[in-house]
Length: 122
Image (tube, rainbow, N blue to C red; front, side, top):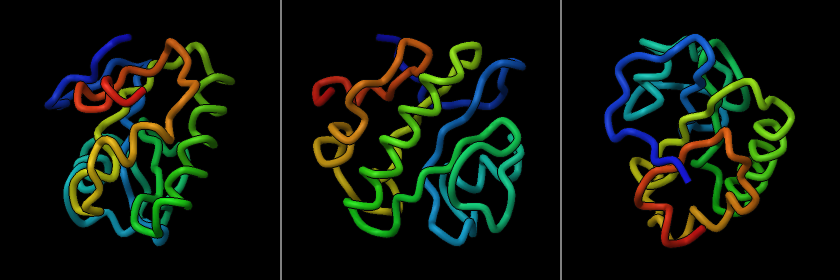
């Protein structure tokens, strides 16, 4: 299992920055702001692949986060030529702990790196 770097400042052409968002796609802080300012996240889009980013709604409750995580797992599986750098979604502004979030990402394909804090719970 590959570990996502703690700090991501640049991406290769095949890499996608996976970050936590809110449903309205207001990317004002944390990893969402980095995604918007640096990697092509679209203001107003709080779900899915945009530019070199993939947004997961982490602000609408754990049930929504879990559903979005499984949608992401399916998307990453269907796009094996891309490398997805999963950040510790939900563990910043959303306020969840890794043990609450990581299990939602069961079944990740090999083209997804994970934050070190998620590893014990996958």
